[in-house]
Length: 182
Image (cartoon, rainbow, N blue to C red; front, side, top):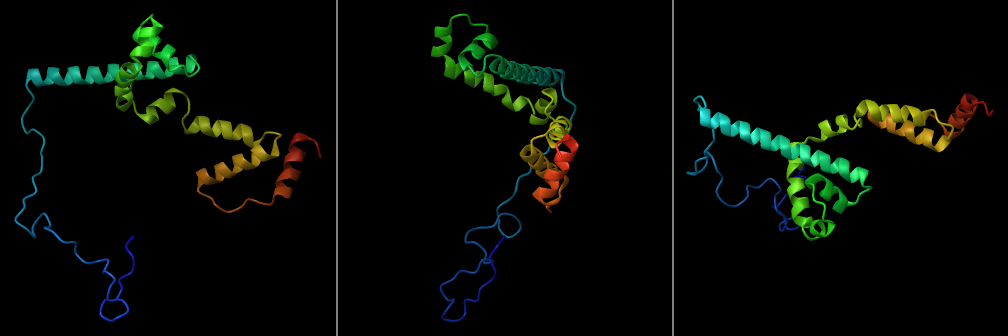
């Protein structure tokens, strides 16, 4: 958002620049002689060689994404040990070699990060919105009052509500009634 326009005509504001003043230099487009070149897709049918090349690129991207997902699974199984996870993914048995080539192997594995989308990964690992709501439901009805309050705040944020639902004392009374400790 731009600041409000200020007067530059009198002494007090003479040193301030106008926020809406055009910047110095040429403006591309109709106002100058600079032409804007737009790229358009190929207007012809692809040849067999081009189709084969596209298929190879798609398969390579899929393989990179699968290897990245396998690395993430191996990292989880190894408890965060990158050396062991890299050894499992690349099938290298010599841990010393993996330690020496760790940067190279990790860079190679991370090439597949762009091939896998975050939404797909969340759904694959059961971390989508439905799973998040199940966990929130569990914490909302838990006997721990603080966890319930935080869960209700998060549910309110997800629903787009920012107003308070009631006082802490009211919630504590309801929580105790639900658990039978009243």
